[in-house]
Image (cartoon, rainbow, N blue to C red; front, side, top):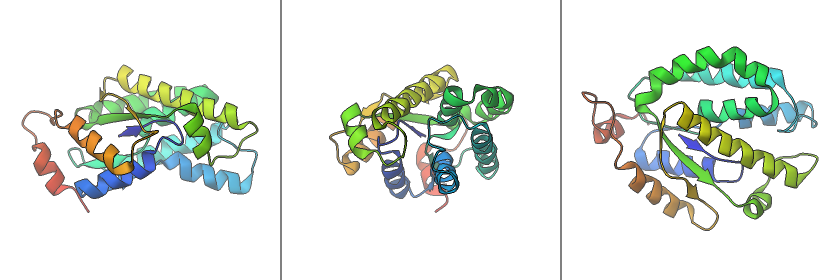
Length: 204
């Protein structure tokens, strides 16, 4: 799983990692839903309170998890820690409603989840900003805060978290190599398929 603020390169890196591993890439659901929301109402930027939106993100993510068999390799962007970090910032009541469902899903998935946090400097994130909002600087600060919160939640939920990678000055291919090197120490649960077998069996 890739976590990090907008502009850190999660989508680019996720696609390259999935291609390298021969597995499925699951892009950030909230990003697509936000594009749809902005098409309907340009005022629904990422910082705006939007309980219905966050509710839909949790529902859609859990629905997508139904088709993810435990033990099958998948590169996923943001996932539940990132979605929960957004909701904690702008609609905590929604997060409270979904907390038990999320906890159950995380318990079921925990042995198979490896988290790679990504970080980016404020100036780089500002240059890469594509999201609309009333104040670009405040929007970048919001996204960076959400990224930090998502990483903290992943740790609090006892997911395996790799050291964070700064993406400002590294080419995507170099980032892929660093993630793969960092993940070599990870192994799936005892008695399960080995990591190499998982990669070979991952759906294309």
